[in-house]
Length: 376
Length: 92
Image 1: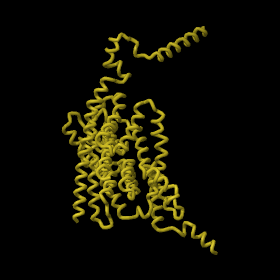
Image 2: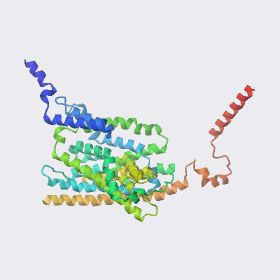
Image 3: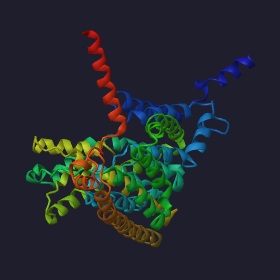
Image 4: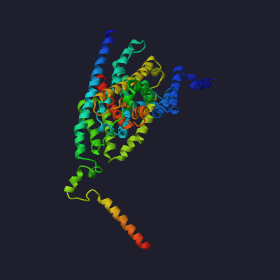
């Protein structure tokens, strides 16, 4: 009898707590979004599965000695995984459109307003009972507005590790929702005539420009914002590997095998942070809400900046490309292209939108550096 | 309440400092692209574009009429022509 009781006590059924069941359902929800809705499946699938694994009673996946515990501490707590992913993103990024039309950097800068405005929102949420965000928490939440998964995870792991799970879920969910969140804002802020604006073809960019660009960015970061050098440095390394043309093997590894392997572990590691006690609270709801606000404000400020630039510029600028300033490469650029095509079937904005899009990546890395330097 | 005001103040300062910094940083990048990169682009154009545009005249002044075709390509073409001729010679 004794051994029977022992056996029963070692089953999952006997040890389940309600919170764990709910979190497993959250994990299943993420799996559903990834598999059925195709929302950022590369990350949401391992993340959802990690959420299920970490909530299995008795198994101790996320306790000392458990796999997920080590994955988290080796890769995410140290910031290594997001940085490796950032290198891969750098190797995938073509700065050609940005170098050809450097003014679009301003759009990438304007869209970062979403980040800093959300900081306010997060602090204001402290009026809600049950929510208590410090300035560090608020900064980590605000970076969701940068629409850049690795940057968000990097900053959250440095400033607010307790909120990492919720922040990563919010960041990636909203990135997947870009095609739904952005178009209404873009249409509301522009007139049909503005959306119809066709832009001049971009000049061709030489190889030497593309090689010197990442080095220049790195040099400027070293001089003015060393706190951002982990992010910007890895990004520039990836980009230099791509553009130099002499290490195609490394560049291809960084943008394929390495980023894939890291994504698996990053997803699992973030999933391990989706435990009931860390996720099931009012703060998570606050974070999810703030994430949506951050995205919307970022989109709006990008579009408004592009409208303003269009008024003063001799060369026409379609305000829609401003929305791509929130990074979320390349989804946001595709959205700008699609909304542009709706207004004018001959208007192909994709290449023009790639400029602010990659500028947004730099912008959010710089914003993350500023937050790290001032709050961290 | 005082604490909240303090936090709002800090958030405001952070927002101002952050936005100013992001704009200044990216504006400097614009200047960098427009000065350094643009000059480099003119000085070192891509080799494929070069013979069609600016450096065309330069290469003439160096009296290198076939300088743009690499020896490897010449070797490959002449090899192929040779083989073609010998094959056709055999056919006849």
